[in-house]
Image 1 (tube, rainbow, N blue to C red):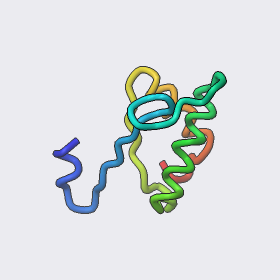
Image 2: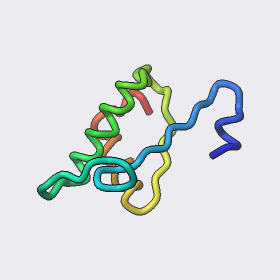
Image 3: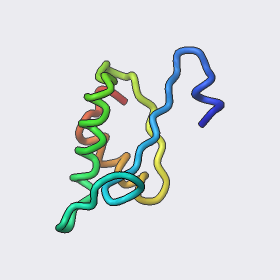
Length: 77
């Protein structure tokens, strides 16, 4: 990550999903679709809303979330 964060014109955002790290754990079950919506809201919050402005990388469940994110905000990717 530090390599990409050091490149001019790039920034890196790393976050914890629900129930991981310092984030709250909801009392009920939640889906990858809901977690992808969390990511979309986080991107909105930090102001990363421009078309074709994102590169998304995810492994395992993160890859599933990345696929869900495509359906939510395709024009940003």
